[in-house]
Length: 323
Image (cartoon, rainbow, N blue to C red; front, side, top):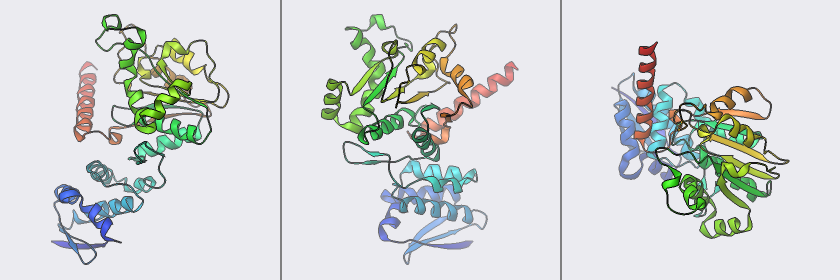
């Protein structure tokens, strides 16, 4: 058995490393088969010679992340060990630092993965960004957060959020109420993000003044959107004509973010996804960036990552069998 000692700057950082009821350090111990003990202002690791350096590097990475103000949650520990397994710990240097914006409850919102951080930078540095990836990666929420940030910094005057009203197993005509009532369920994730970031009162006030607009994609036709931050969510369910129509709404001093998951297309089989086509057509155009998330960027329950991996493996097997 070998030993390693890692000094820790302060008690708060040490407490964050160990986590609530020592949950974080237990995950490190289980992952690498080591024993971790708090000793003399640091952490003493005991384990096999081959696994000990991996555990040591993971702990040091977690301490660096904590030192930059990032909370050490269960997800953070899983993410760090996953990056360590891929030999990509150096990429974690990008995490931490300044937050994106503050939520209505006073919490500083930060990117939680390297993929999220690069997505935020892409939105900051480009006029149009396409965020492609699986559920739970924060594609929509981070786009809304960047819109709120731009609004608070007076870079834009309006926030416009839209989705195609495509049924996933339901028919709009059978839902109760008028057209707004029928489409509201499709727009709910956008409302939720805005409530979280602005608060209910500010959100209602901005909606009333027309500063925030949440509407189905069909409502965008024929408009030119100046000084606006425009987000198209669930873009995998647009047709080629719809996404072209949306892209050409771009006005002066505006930005666009288009998000979607090309593995969850709800269009009829005869319709081709506009998002899939747009990724091919727009590749290489200056000031347009296509950002791809992976299952490592999933920040929901750990099972979401496992589910995505299982489906990817299943689909790969089907493709091989049909090949």
